[in-house]
Length: 367
Image (cartoon, rainbow, N blue to C red):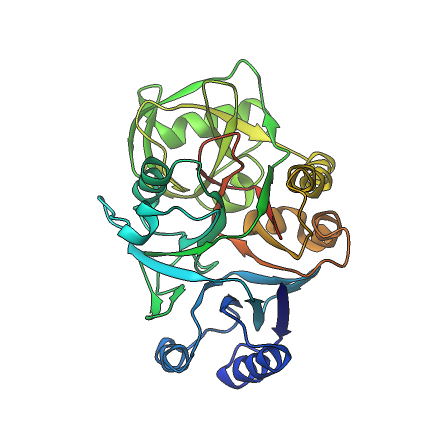
């Protein structure tokens, strides 16, 4: 069983009151915490509070938390499970090492909550898939601040950390859906990341990356400068083109010199294109997300208990006040639902390899 409890103030008193309401219903075996960054949390106070928990906890601080269809800029939501719930904390570095407990017996479901602004997103994603393959179904997202300043943001049983991934292993039935709704600006437009390092693209087609990006957007009537970069770039994301044509969105968030800094890694010599979308195409994608996950879940024959949503914060920025329409499509019923607006999304449906996405919506249904 999965049950939730939300609160609307970003302070320890409100968090503790929500915890008491949550645990009064039934003693959980583990709890996920999706906290909205709000006006800011005290790391020391959170660490003290986490140390007093008698059940495993994991989660993060995100730009926004999701409770049902409600988007929380303050407070957060607690998600309790009565199924066994095991949390491992893994350092995000150039050569991450997974604990033996995971590699010897991969779980059926793995929730991945990582530092979305770490420069080492790619190594942890690749290590997870290399070590565990598609034995688990994965879903999760990047913790962090909308200010794009890296700070401690991942909640582990040991406290709140930076450059860490919290891996939540559960042996329960799940299914995952992934949708984004962005389309290529031009089907014939292909660019090569001729020089890149982690999440920074230095050159495209052997020329400074920002110059190429600016020229292409100008050809399609969009003027982008250092001053308006984030405002314009959110409507024109990049995408890595996979061999089978799958598009993995990469969100350019700022310029460093003439380089493009993205949320998520772009390996050297990756083939890229530029995407564009409108409200209709993104809403259509959101409309189909729950159905895609539900079809896979129904095939397992279990009863639905809850839903986790990991939706990119940049989709909310794209829609503005109209984001409520996306939430109506992502949460089409009264099934217990919680999650976050994230800095990058993690998913593996069992049909594609594990990936770190941007500007994408991910739904995990749990039984």
